[in-house]
Length: 363
Picture 1 (cartoon, one colour):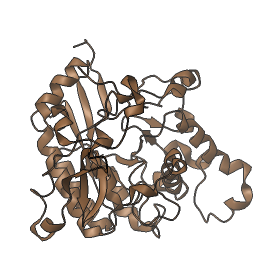
Picture 2 (cartoon, rainbow, N blue to C red; picture 1 turned 90 degrees about the vertical axis):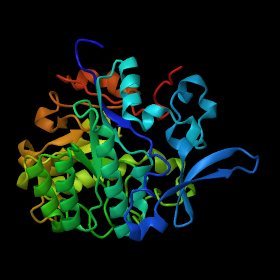
Picture 3 (spheres, rainbow, N blue to C red; picture 1 turned 180 degrees about the horizontal axis):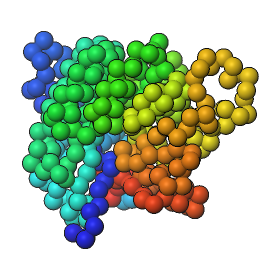
């Protein structure tokens, strides 16, 4: 290992086939997500996740490490559990493989779990989140200084979400995913979330927005329970929901009322962040007419020193601090690497997104 400690801010586990069926509350046992094997019309075997009889994900989508570099034409959504590397579900194996790569520690996220936010049954979603939070706690327990788990929260019921966030903090988890866009009629500017903001601030737990975590039923969003609804246009514009939710918080004054609140954007490319900040900041000066109708919602230029938009779980960005704090970005973010001259970061955080197809495989 090198003298310094290299930490991946975005690594993923792969959920074992029995994670939910073996741990979920008895009332949901028959509806718990389960992995089943299927075959294509040509006879190729693959494992897929099912819930309430509906196929909602395939295992191959999250075990493509190396394919982009070895043969991109073979990247697909099919795969079987036997092909999953042990490091994706065993902490001891993960530590060993991290050390081979020169990585000392990692912040750990779900894989298929990120897509459960589309489940329409809110009570079932909350139960699934609790199962994952318990499992990732157990996973990190052998190496508490080197493996840090990120929780999952369903915020449909804010009081329940805050209780779960407090429980996760007690378990030692260091962040929590919330839907990148919540239920359609309650965006993050809604006052119903006030308790969530102050709870996260008091616990010093970052809340994270991942591009794939929309709640179901969002108009215009192609991330649904049916994977066939996702088109190339929908996949290439997923960062919109991150920008909208952060904008809703900013203009509603959330970061003014809770200046120590940390909200992270996970997965959007790093160079999008300065452009997002520029666009939000410009709303104060270039579009005065709509501003009259914001009814006290602050444009960023008015109270920006209180704002901290955190990137990739490990850093912050705001316009006065843009040249000091932009950290994080995927390893393939070539535009951000070329644009480093306009960022001038003191620290550059990164993530590998292992075991997705972004990263090389190991022999």
